[in-house]
Figure 1 (cartoon, rainbow, N blue to C red):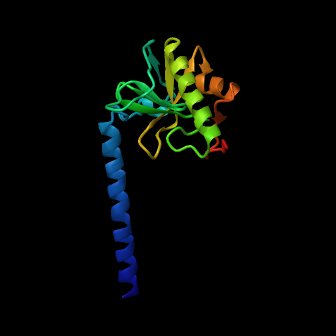
Figure 2 (cartoon, rainbow, N blue to C red; figure 1 turned 90 degrees about the horizontal axis):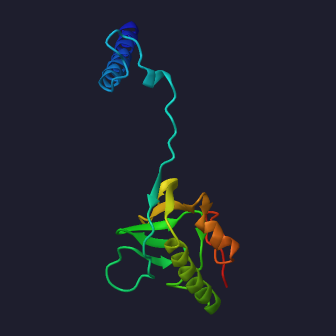
Figure 3 (cartoon, one colour; figure 1 turned 180 degrees about the vertical axis):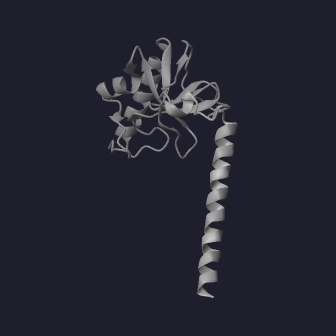
Length: 172
């Protein structure tokens, strides 16, 4: 009886492994990674290139957002809309304008908003995906640069932003 159980376990244990192996071969073959002669394609043997894709944005108008539908405008010092997509500048944090903690934060937030609008209209810029595509609010997380220089870093140097460190800093 014990021998039958052991044999049954080995047989059942082997079937899922065989099934997984066959499925893996089928998927790999379907992806074109196994050539007809049974050798592996270069795509499987060589490491995949790491692509850092950046989107180039031509010069255009970026007014400060007002009521109504938002298409291309600046929300605050670290958030803007571009062609109906909300973008969060990933490498900085700026003072809040919608719910500031104090009058000083409100004033600095308004300055950061106007300055971001100025920076965005100053010429074409590039946007690159940050460490992830979106934040928990559905905003696209992007590093925004012009000529290799982060626009967020410009705001930091001007005292209108903090470098993003994973949590908001105090402005009051």
